[in-house]
Image (tube, rainbow, N blue to C red; front, top):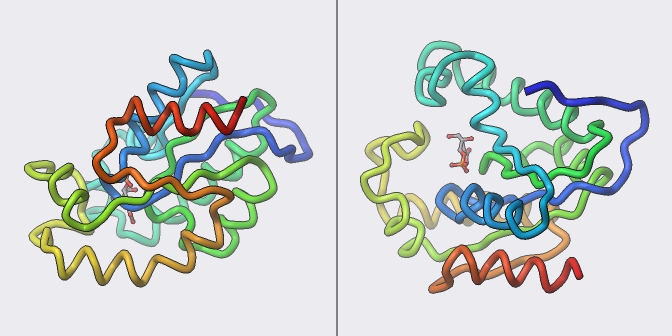
Amino acid sequence: MKIQTKENFSKKHIYLIGYMGSGKTTVGRILSEKTDLPCIDMDEIISSRLSMSIGDIFDKLGETAFREAESSLLEEIAASTAPLIVSCGGGVPLMHENRLVLKSSGTTYLLEADPEEILRRIEGDESRPLLENKKSISYVSEMLESRHNAYAEASDMTISTNGKTPEEIADEILAVLK
Ligand code: S3P
């Protein structure tokens, strides 16, 4: 996908952030249908550009290379002239630089879910290298705790997604947008 660029960032995009399994991709697609804004998924773009699954990128190129690709894609997205709905990878808000880019180029919605709900949603999904053989309440809780401040700092609004359908979550965001 080619993203048009312009020199100055403006606050226009809708960024969805949150932990793995919080529903960013699904909610992004629904929001896109309801708003007619294009939706992009950062993991999908990185994976397609490198012609590798996210797991293979972590295995073969390493997490640092993935994080660099992620930050540079985020800058590219931020500079896009057209407003976009962006499903961010769960690690995007962890870097200070990325948080600044999010803040300066869009409104950021944090989708939150309890560890129990996250584990239910990602059951049987082996696409996330950071959770390979680590799908336990204690591991996910610790990781959520360690990411809490970065997620809170990056977000303009927090949406609890526990027990809600992706449609309901998208409607909550739409209600704020209107
Ligand atoms: C990651 C989240 C994943 C993907 C990678 C790392 C993270 O994206 O970018 O596996 O650090 O939280 P999703 O949040 O879309 O699963």
